[in-house]
Image (tube, rainbow, N blue to C red; front, side, top):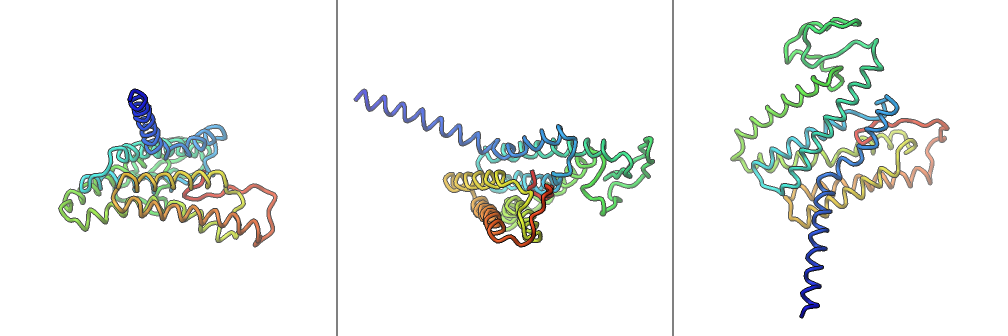
Amino acid sequence: MEDEELFDQILSVVNALVSWVAAGAMVFGGLVPYVPQYRDIRRTQNAEGFSTYVCLVLLVANILRILFRFGRYFETLLLWQSIIMIATMLIMLNLCTNVRMATELNTKRRSFLATDIKDEEVRIPKRLFLDFDWSYFWSWSRFVDYLQCVLAFTLMAAYITYVLLDSTLFVESLGFLAVFAEAMLGTPQLYCNYQNKSTEGMSIKMVLMWTSGDTFKTGYFLITQAPVQFWTCGLLQVMVDITILFQVYYYSRYPQKPVSHTVSHTTSAKAL
C-alpha cells in the first residue's frame, strides 16, 4: 500500500512537471526563433534579412485572437501567448526601425502620422492622421508610427467586436481569421522557393524548428480541446511546413537552376 501511494505521488509530481513544461513551451515557445534573429540584427546592424511583414501578420493575428476570447472562451495560456508575441513583435519592430534609420540617413523619412519634425536631412510636411502614403505602408521611419497604426487597428477591431459580439457567425469568423492569418505565415517562403526553383539561402534548421513547434502546438490544441479554429489552422500550418521541407528535398535532388556560390538573403514572412 505504501509503495502504491509513493508511486501515485511520484506520478502526480511528474504530471505536474510535464504540465508546467508544456505550458511554458506554449507561452514562450513562439518567441524563441526570434531571439537569434534579434541578436543577429544587433550584431550586424543589418535588418535586411528580416521582413517586418512577419511582425504585421503576427500582430494582426494575435490582436484578433485576444478579441476572439471575449466571444469564445479559450485557455488563459493561449491568451498569455498572444500578449507575449505582441510584445516580441513590437520589440523586433523597434530594433529594425532603429537599425534602418541608422543605415539610411540619406533616404527620405516616411511617417504614418506626419508632423512638423525637423532634422538635418529633411523636413516632413504636416499631414492628417488618415492622410498617409500607401506606397510606404509598414515602411515608416519611426517606431512610434508603427505603434500608432497598431493602436488604430486595435481600437477599430475592438469597436467592431463590441458591436457584433452577440453574433455567433462574427465571433467564429473572427477566431478563424486570427488563427488562419498565423497559419499562412509560411506561404511567402513557400512561394518564394517555388519562384526561385531553389531553397538556397533558407535555413533548413529553422524550418525543422517551425515544423516541430507547429506540430507540438497543434497536438496541444487537440488535447486541451481548444476551439476548432485553432487545431484546424494548426494542421494547415504543419502542412505548409512539411511542403517547404519537401521543396528542400525536391530542389536538392532535382536542381532546377545552377547553384550560385554566393549566399543569398531570403526575405520572407518567416525569414530568420
